[in-house]
Amino acid sequence: MKNLFLASALGASLLLAVFISPFASNSPDGLEKVAENHGFARLEKTERRAYIPQLAESVSKNESEATGVAGFAGAMLALAVGVGLARTVSRGKNGGSPGCKQ
Image (cartoon, rainbow, N blue to C red; front, side, top):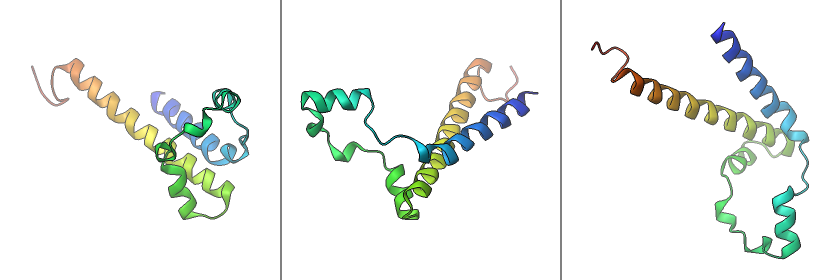
């Protein structure tokens, strides 16, 4: 039952990341709009932008396809971090590695 839930959640995340994210609005969100209105948006450092979209653009010149690739890569990265964090936390509760008898 737990595996079915995890597979369904992963499937839904990938579906959203790959097929729905290309339709996201290009308009600025609330924080960006405030920064533009108050004139400090120009102070943003371009080096701080995420590298996943740049990588996706190098894979595909089609913008919506590149957005899907970036969504997939981001979802997989989030999954890897989550699994690693869950394993680390569960080892801490057992007082050692999973195979260790105490």
